[in-house]
Length: 175
Image (cartoon, rainbow, N blue to C red; front, side, top):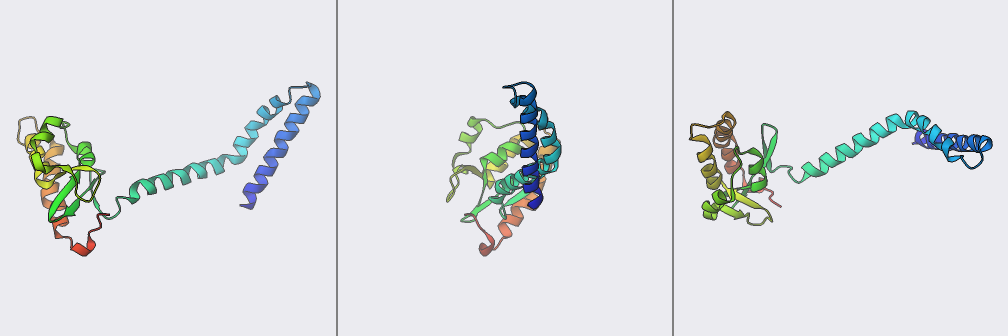
């Protein structure tokens, strides 16, 4: 912290010296001297700027991921939240939208009926396990099936859903 304070004092002195020097030679144009000294600011504070942006990035990532802590699974780098409410698994629509190819339409969602809606105890739209499997059925049982969708369905049925169903009630934190 002392080094940063010393750098700030040094940069202010350099900027003031640049202002005075240019104003001495060309009266009224001292601000140009401050612009010339900005090169030294960049050199002097380069590491501090990098550390500041790294700190901002770290805290932004932490705040974005914190709400997911303990209630998500990961498929191909995409986080998927699962909510187990009254023995029904709900998946937020936002997470499903990132994964499904091709993207689903509003018509498909309406056809899901009760398997689509606002997740109980939450304020986000989602689909149930059955609704997601119904959406996946049209994407995995046609001639134009993508390999990613087949892998996703296999991962969902073999890893994610059984693990969510197996969680003890004390481990579930949906708040």
